[in-house]
Length: 97
Image 1: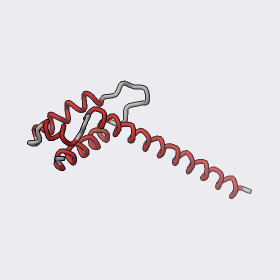
Image 2: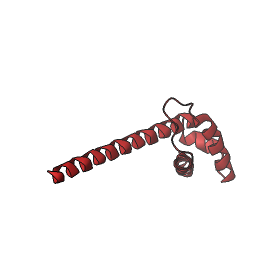
Image 3: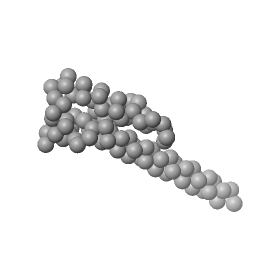
């Protein structure tokens, strides 16, 4: 397996998600488009498609998985923020008593 292809794709996808944001649940996945963009960027960086294919059985599926993981992280962060707000509100109520 090509370590440089693996590292390139993982970094590229992370940066792409950071730039573009996580697509909303139910929205059409950009994974197929992003996979094509990733392959182009890799080629420009001297990594041929064959190396990517060697490292990933299905690049589009990998990107979809990364998007889903990012969505779950965002949801977890939102839940944590809500819990922090609830606790802060409860603390304020306790102090008022």
